[in-house]
Image (tube, rainbow, N blue to C red; front, top):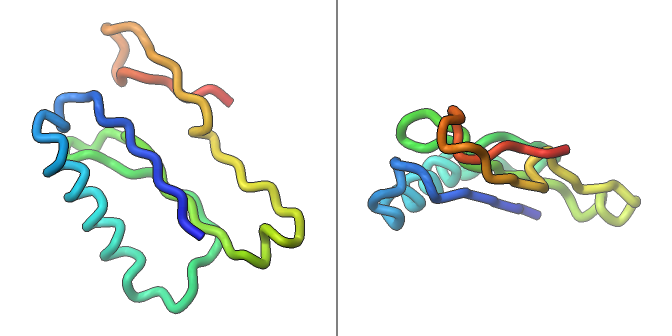
Length: 91
């Protein structure tokens, strides 16, 4: 299973479709040679290197055995315009 979350409100997304497509192509390149998705959770970065989301993979087996699929990115909160990123992650 695969879950993707991308926040598209920073400057790198002026051409939103192009940047989202670039991020998804990078992710596809990472996943293409895997025989099976394993449990992992890694950040997605925009063209400027900022973390703009995450992707998470897990197996049906892990879910059926009661594994809790959660993320530190579950809740996104808007931050001050003076902050380094336009959002912060709330646990």
